Amino acid sequence: MKVTVVGSGYVGLVTGACLAEMGNHVLCMDLDERKIQVLREGGLPIHEPGLLEVVQRNVAAKRLEFTTDVDAAVRHGTLQFIAVGTPPDEDGSADLSHVVAAARAIGERMTDYKVIVDKSTVPVGTADRVREAVAQALAARGMELEFAVVSNPEFLKEGAAVEDFMRPDRIIVGGDDERALLLMRALYAPFVRSRDRLLVMDVRSAEFTKYAANAMLATRISFMNELALLAEKVGADIERVRLGMGSDPRIGYSFLYAGAGYGGSCFPKDVKALLHAAAVQGQALRVLDAVERANDQQKLVLVDKITARFGADLAGRVFALWGLAFKPGTDDMREAPSRVLVQQLLARGARVVAYDPVAMDEARRVFGDNPGIRYADSAAAALQDADALVLITEWREFKSPDFDALRTQLRQPVVFDGRNLFEPALMRAMGLEYHGIGRSA
Ligand code: UGA
Image (tube, rainbow, N blue to C red; front, top):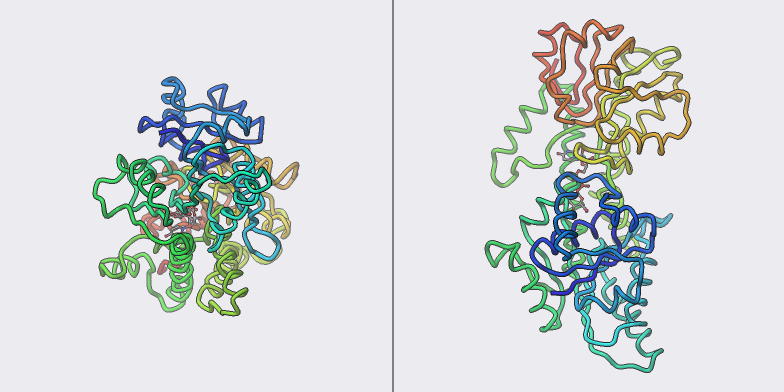
C-alpha cells in the first residue's frame, strides 16, 4: 500500500519505517529540512534502538523515502498518517495547530479518496476537527471528494518502539467508514497474530482509550511511589510488596516500580491534557489530579534524601549523577526527573558530575553553559572525588558496578538509588551506605 506519514518525529518515523518493513511504500514528510536532511544522509534525528537498521534496510529497498514537499506527500499515500507533535498549551490542553494544519494541507491538495489517520495523541473530538478542516479546504476549492478520518493511537514506549510496533499488544482503530476500516485491517494484518488484537471501535472511544491507558499507567506509578514513602516509615520494603501485589493476576507486575517519578513526553503531557478535558466538561478527575501532584512531589524525593543526609546547604558538595534520560534506552530528557534534581542540587550550592550513556548531548542542550554541571566520560569517571553517587536512570550498564571503586573513589561511600536498581543488602555488604526508594533499612 502507499502510505504517507506527516511528521517525521519519534512516532512518525517508527510508524513509517515499520510499515515499510512489511512491504508498504512509505513517504515520510516533515517541514523541518534539517531533520529530513539527516534522514536522507542515512542518519536518525532521534535515538531509538533498532530503528536505524529498519530505516536503512527500507531506504535501500526503496520502500522508504523522505521529503519536505507537501504536494508530493499528499499525492503519494491513500493512507495519510498524521503524526505531528501535540505539545501542551499553557493550560495543559493539547495544542492541535499542527494536526489541523496537516489536515488542511491534505484537503487543499487531494485529488482522490484518502484515509486520514490520526496517529498523534489527540483529545476526544479531534477527528471531527480534522474532518472539518479537510472538508473546508475541499469546499474552498469547490471540490467534493470522498475521504475518511480514522483514529489510530500509538502505544509505543521509547527505547522499545520498534519492538512495540512490530509486535503490538493491541492495535486500536476508531472509525466508521467501511472502506477505510478494510484498508486499515489490511495494513495491520501482518502485525497481528490473532484477529482480536485489532480492536475496531468508534472514533471517540479510540481517542479516549489512549489517554485512559496512559493515565492508568501513571496512576499505578504514583500510587506505588506514595506507598514506597509509607513503606520506609513503617519498615516495609516496597520491592517485596511489589512482588507480593503483582502476583495477583488482577494487579499484574508491570508499571509498579517505585522511583524518582515518571517523566517523558507522554505521561506528564497526557495526564495534563485529560485533566484539562475533564475540567472543560465541569468534571473533576480527583484521582488523576492527585496522581499529577504526587509525581511533582516524587521528583523531589532524591533531593529530600540528600538534604536529610548532607544538610540543606550543599555548598561545596559534589554529586556524581548516573543517568540523565527520563528512562533507559533513549536520549530523551523531556520532563525527566534528572532536570528537577540537577536544578535543585545546583540551587543549594552543590556541583554535579553527570554521566549518561546516550543523553549527554541532550543534557548539554538542556542545561546550557552551566558551570555547576560537568560531564564525565564514563560512569566510573563521574565518581572521582564526588561526595556521593545519585542514580536516576536505570541503565543496564549501571546495574553491576565496581563496588570497590564506589567505596574508594567517592569521598563518602554513600549511594542514593532513585530507581531501586541495587539490592540494599548487597550494597551494605560491600560497605556502602545505601538509600533507595521505599526500601527497608
Ligand atoms: C508511555 C507508555 O508506556 C506507552 O504505552 C505510550 O505509547 C507512550 O507513553 C506514549 O504515549 O507515546 P514512554 O513515555 O516511552 O511510554 O515510557 P514508559 O516506559 O511508559 O515510562 C514513562 C515514565 O514512567 C519513565 O519516566 C519511567 O521511569 C517511569 N516508570 C515506568 C516508573 O517510574 N515506574 C514504572 O513502573 C514504570
